[in-house]
View (tube, helix red, strand yellow):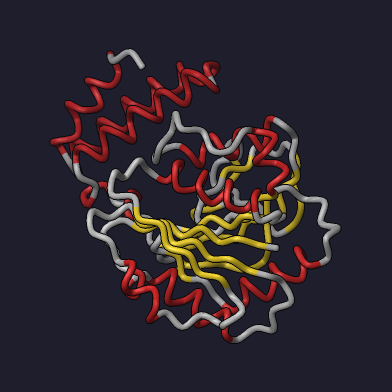
Length: 276
């Protein structure tokens, strides 16, 4: 059995490209797996009334959870994880509201998980933003992306959306780390996969994703400061050997911001001296 957890924020289910594309793609494949879809809505206003108008196949269970407190994606993912545990599911798929789910993705994933003998702990697609592959990447091999195949302790980093995780692995790490409510949760997750030498299967499928934080000018200063904060927190706690490189990279980042988004320079300087 298999659960999708889709996290929304200030987006309605009917307008989410993830939900629309997942709905369309699930109709086109021959499902042998029992599926639940949890829509976890962090928006201020509930969209529960829209759920009845979604048109997923009738054998798929769709649940809606509204959480206007907006504690972040880690809380939402833990909700999905706990549901999957109670439902005795084997896998949990993480999705945000901006990923296009294709028929090819589902056709590649489901035969793998339906065999019940998959030795991997995470299944991840290749993610494209505009023309470039943004996930997965090697953290120690700049400019090189992993080809499809299995990897263990290979310093692979990927984004959350589209990742499919084995419930047994999530139980081993105690679910999702609330120290990272939103930013750098993916860094922590893949750090744990690599640290525990878990097997990551990179599949052939490429999904399109709108990575808003990739574009410096479009990121608000408050959000940018949060990214800086959790970046430093993650490196200091989990990769302290990289702190010298962190300070060097911050200088390069400042120079870039001077040219593109000068208002962010004081934030970088503030974070350099901030205790986390």
